[in-house]
Image (tube, rainbow, N blue to C red; front, top):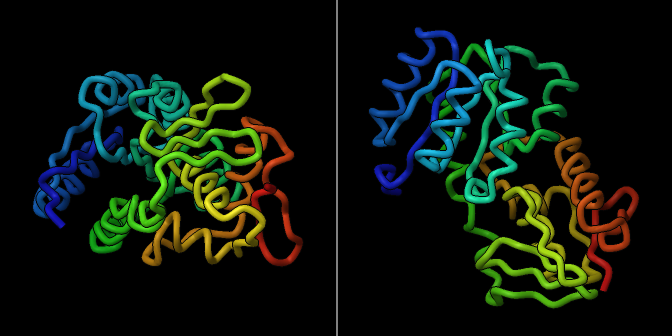
Length: 228
């Protein structure tokens, strides 16, 4: 994979971490942009439109959670991958990150090889869902447009973050088929990314809040399916 076509916005208020990670990412061929607080991160994300953002959680001026919430409101950054860097491994901080719109998280202290591997896996973003031939799905009165990354319901466009859209597209591509959590992990996140079961639940809840509760059904003890 040619990493030179990918840009990464690295956001952390600790100068030594920024220098350390910038060195390792640049060595892998990525174009690296840096910021030392959430406010600057928002400005640089809007200006450079990075492929991926590595965002620290605890920062001055604007914290990482607030910055990501603001970035996710920008339609032009809807497809940007966001990974939180955090020293806090508790479940509640992970869930807060996913609810803000993050795709993944990495806990500190950061091991460069692990981070590089995680980034490479995340950048294989369209590998599974892109195998579906159709670009536009019409199912259960929803129009799901993969080329524009939008869902149209009752004439209104609904914009979802990347992972949420890919989950909807995957489930809707085969209505009434039950997808296990492992199926969803592999097809949306990829085999190289390890996330907990709560990740799926958080994303499904947020999807239901945005498109309605009637579309995705929970099959207890198995997974989820899209109602035809």
